[in-house]
Amino acid sequence: NLNAEVINQGDTTHAPTDKYKDTVFSYGTAGFRTDADALDRVCYRVGIVAAIRASETGAAGVMITASHNPLKDNGVKIIDKNGAMVTQSWEDPFTNGVNSSDLVQYISDLIAEKGIAYSDKARVCVACDTRDSSPRLIAALKAGIEAVGVKVKDFGELSTPQLHFLVWFADKENYSPEDIDGMNEEIYYDYYKKNLQEYWALISRDEESHYQSQLVVDTANGIGGKQLKKLDIFTNSSHYGLDVTVLNDGSTGTEFLNHKCGAECIHKDKSFPLGAEEIKTDDNTKWVSFDGDADRIVYYYGNPSTQDLNVIDGDKIAILLGDYIKSLMNNITNDKTSLSELITFVVVQTGYANSAATKYLTDKGVKVERVPTGVKYLHHRAEQYDIGVYFEANGHGTVISKYQKIVKILQDNDFSLDDAHVNKFLKFLLLTNEAVGDALATLLMVEAFLKDSGKNTKEVNEIYSDLPSRMLKLAVKDRSQFKTHHEDETLLLQPEGLQDRIVEIFSKVEGSRAFVRPSGTEDVVRIYAEAPTLEDADKIADEINDMLAKEF
Ligand code: G16
Image 1 (cartoon, protein in one colour):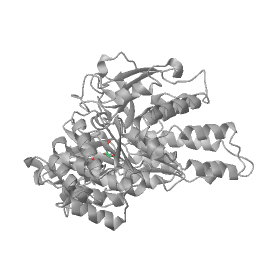
Image 2: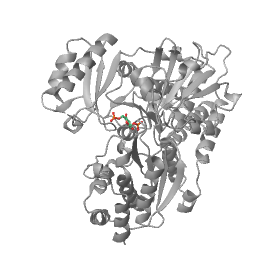
Image 3: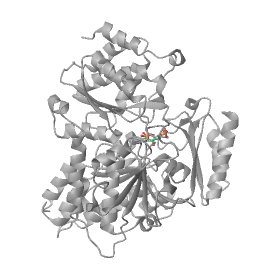
Image 4: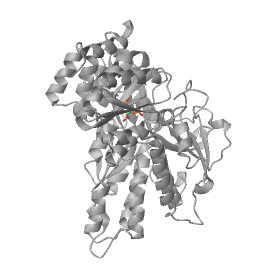
């Protein structure tokens, strides 16, 4: 029973300004993302469609954030009841709802087509990051959800992965709508505090350990700084042997959100974050950077004053965690079998994965799969295995496992759950965020691994050397004319003939590769080049950039 008057009234209240009244919004790599001023009605309508999706499944989530983008942008990430990004078959209903010229008709048709019955039990969980435009957009979103009679659970300010986690947790625990109403972010902190504490008690204490105690965490002046302090594991406790400094924690406001700091800046510009030089550090300092909504993390080390910077990116984090999990599994053997033989395991990458990372894995016999950019693709591929480690080179990723199935495999094969190795392996799986890439959860996993292995960042970085690479972005008139092959988006199908010219450019340098794809989060195309020397990678990227800049 849709109330057309209420729905239309809200749609008018949240109508776009003249500047954006003809804008057609497309569903990007991680939902809708653009200039915050364009998004009021998008948020209102996303609220309506999310309420319909929640009526179908029981719950949904919507996060207001533009993650790594500049402050002027904002966006919407949509979450399914299981905590993962909304299933791809619902991307069209969201896009059509946002762009429809007759909203009430469109949603009536959608409800009829999907056979969805309204449920006052449905909940849409919402949260936002720290952007100035977020409160306004949250209000529009909530108005949309409520316009169709569905209830909102508003968590206030969270990191994106925290909202995913809370939706996932409610689903895992089979929470009633009233249980969801009573939830708060403490569930997240309690979960990880307990799991880290229990895991830390199991790991080795080697006198010769090279574990580094000084850790600087650059949180990009986003939500991550506050949430890291609330998690309160490393920041306020000497228990874990860490001395943590939070840099760019956002306490002075959001003016410098993602500005010359954060994971994107470290990974792409390969320079230390703003403020790094002011901190007293030495060669033994460990550094990490989150992005604005704390779903990405990269590790690095070096010298801020000389800008000598060595990045341990998402590819390497995946390998370190993957190797570690495999070593934990290899300890679980009996006279009949070993756990490693019973578990399917994969590492999922995108076209941006450094060739050296892929080679390292395939040389070791590890199954590697490649998918298009976007954690939604990586997550769904990883779900096809018992344990899936997925990370994009930019630091966005996690480890997911079929925990209950693994427990059953252990029991069916006469492994005792009380065995110390089994216990340790299972407890490690509880440090991950099962729903999505999470800078905080990955920090805990990597620190646990580093502590247990007794290695420092330099030692773990040296397991293989990345091929030098360069990533550039270029604003073109219309990025929608760039169409890629879907496998891992490293081949351009359109504009016609362009792929051959890219190949011609990088073929001049043996052992190099390059590709161009349109970004799904920024109004740019991305140019990636990899070559045996940085000079060559730069030359290839620049040449492609110049060619595109002239013609597009
Ligand atoms: C989002 C996606 C990531 C993707 C990134 C860049 O990250 O969640 O999977 O790698 O955008 O995508 P594109 O190259 O299409 O712009 P975030 O951290 O910005 O939400």
